[in-house]
Image 1 (cartoon, one colour):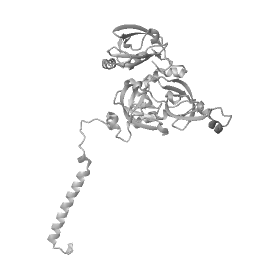
Image 2 (cartoon, helix red, strand yellow):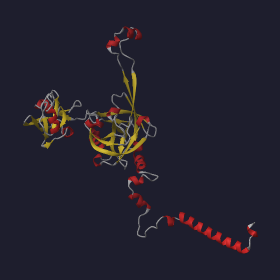
Image 3 (tube, helix red, strand yellow):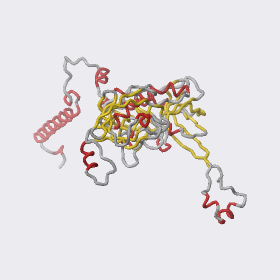
Length: 405
């Protein structure tokens, strides 16, 4: 039966019920989408504008937005980050035992003198511009023994670079390119960095140009000996921002886009750990590198080991131990280099350095830092424990010629 054929009273009742049901549905739908019901009304006491709210956001909160603090930091520095390509010609000789073998002589010919054809080795690294006149800071190992250095800017331009100065002890190098009015990376202060701060690495890892990775500062003052490169004199910034081959020499940034370090080291036996040279160290020697002069580092001339009473007891209880050492906190002299300041002053193997210039010494890293902060030719008052006796020795530092302290 059609609706129109129903009695009038039934048609009126059905129409009224449908109207009520439809009204309820529309009301519920409005409640679900109405902004005034979905969110509480703003308090009349609230005076923050959208701009003030944005300023109060933490970097982490800002990162949720469409334009994060990472984007702002990279935009501030990105144009000043460069790619560094190097070329080096290597000539190799066949070892004499093989060179004298008749097979090799027949293979290479009778006129062969044991020298193989020159080989071109190519390297890749990163750097960043610190002066608009064309000064580029990078790692010393990036340009080590390079015959040709090419600096490639983010805008596609390439320049031949001249290595202005190198300091292998701090693994820093300065390159000069003939260009003007270049973008410059703003330098921060690594002394203000704290564990937990944001860390942004920018560079060209594995040949992938203009790569950005994000992490935090994991720890500070990680010694070069702990990192596994004892031939350097550095306390690194450790970060979990991804750093790979090719990142070396590139900047490590804080959340404001300021350079706080120079990415330099990777532990092959660890995942997600990288190390950067504090930018304050680079600031100390940049002027010397620009002049092309050698950076002078003072040294004593000892190989050393941090000593504790527990380690000393273990050594002394070993019947095969070559020496007996005092059971104290200090730095054990493992070896004295010939003709070094320490040797000339009378320091011996087995001595324990317990004080320098009136300051107690408990770790090898502490002693190294004190020596590094001194001057070449400065006389240091060193207190040592030799057996059961304590002696005061004057040691005049000399200029470091190799990586030993």
